[in-house]
Length: 337
Image (cartoon, rainbow, N blue to C red; front, side):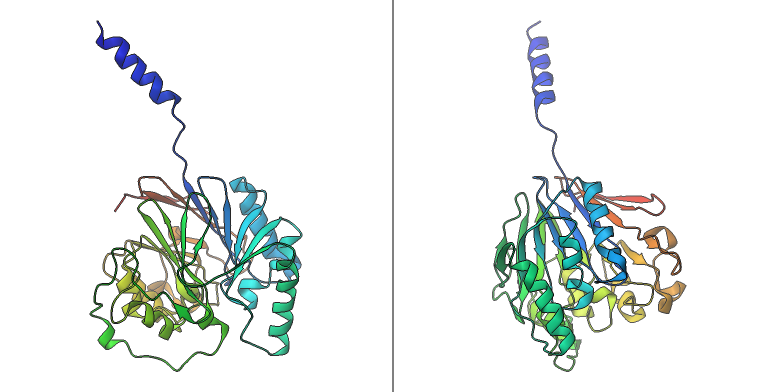
C-alpha cells in the first residue's frame, strides 16, 4: 500500500518538471548567400550572416519571417563571417526590421575596392549602434544555452585541438594546396556550435588552404553531426581531407540555383564515409540529377518563382535532431550519435 503514494508522488513530480527545450536552426534561402538563424533553448538568438542587399528587402524579409516563426523578436548576436555582399549586404535592411544587439566580426575588411569600402561602411554604421565582439580563434560567443567557439577569424585558426580532437589525418598527404587566397573568404569567421553532444560546424566561405590548416597534419576540430557546407558548395572549399576529417552525419548546403553546388564538391560530401544525407536550399542546375540530393531533401526546386523555402532543424537535448523541408513538409529524424 505504501508503494502507491510513492509512485504517485514520483509521477506528479515528473509532471511538474519543466519540459526540456530544444535548439532550433533555420537555414534561410537568400539565393546563394547565407543567413542561418540559431535559437538557443534559453530563447537567445544568433544569426550568421544576412544575405544580399537590394531586391526590395527580399532577404531581410525572409529572415524576419523565420524569426517570427521561431518567436524571435530581436537578434541577440549577429555574426558576420566575412565582408562579401551575399553575407553582409543585408545588414541595413534587416536592422530596419529587427533590433540587433551585438555584432560579431573579424575586424575591418581586407578588400578595398570601391564596392568593398561601401559595403563595409554601411555595415559599420549599424554596428556602431550596438555592442561589438571582435572574433578571434578560441573566443566563446556567449549565447546562453549554447557553446559557440570561434575556430577561425581574420586568417588565423585555433592553435590547439579541441577536446577529443588532435588525431592524425591520413588524407592530408593527398591534399594539394591551392594558390593563396587574399580575399575576405580566407578571413571567414568559422564556428563550432555545440548543444550537449550535438555539434554543428559553420566555416562561412573559408577556402581550401585555410581548411587544410585546421585538419592537417592533425585534425583540430574532430567530428561533427551537422556540416554547414563551406562556401555554398563551391569547389574553392571542401577538400576531401577537410570533409572526411570532420566526418559529418548530415550536410546542409546553402547554395543557389546557379551559385555553389559544384558537382566535385557535392561528390566529395556525398561519398564521405559516415554521411547519411545532404540537404540543399536549392537544386543546383549545374549538377544535374547525379550531383543533387533527391527532391525531398531540396527546399527550392524551381529557379523561376522561388518562394524562399527554408530548412529547419530541431535539436533535442539528447543529441537527436530532426531536419524538416518547409516546401514539402518532409522530415527525417537522426538518432543521437
